Image (cartoon, rainbow, N blue to C red; front, side):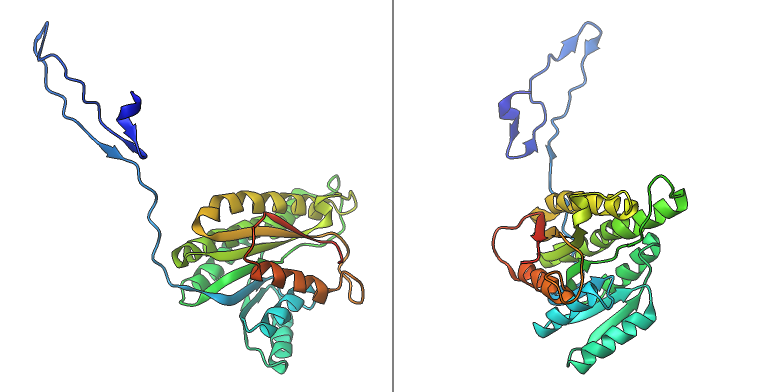
Length: 267
């Protein structure tokens, strides 16, 4: 096919004149055909709210600190976690601080259950335009001694849940013209620890997932990144939940050059 036959992303049909007769008689005339290559249609779903934050893995530590920080910034909040008692306590603390938060119970170790819950959430108008995936199975273990069920459960929580959440949120964000998705990473991605086998594996894969999903969605105005926390989260230290939450806030508010990984090194 010549260069003239392909222009502006459109593939034109062959137009060469063919002989009208062959050895066996008349040759049926081939009709010209034009095929146009187009981009997939953008779904027109309910609009998302760019100042609505969803925290998956909301609890008394980092997830709660992120919720409090965004509440201070005037965001509407939806909190998701497996344990309803922890959600109730966090929502009550936020209410005492003058912030309203919706709560949703779901288990990240059940990816299809998580998908169903998030699909319902993102079917409504004003769904979260900012998503933080903070769920993780922080259990000391060894890859050599972990059975298959444990390996699957850890990977579902640490990695698959983040991908599922992105799969659900992305169409709504795309229809709204953009959104932000952040994954909580960890220093185990830099320095895997044999005594923390599954979480080391999970954080390494999660960082790669953020890079790939970000590349897939950048053209839709959806920003995806991991935030690598290069230290142990502990109150009263440079790695306190409140200080790390400030990093999440600054990343979301940034309108500068985006990157697939941001780091928090305690400063």
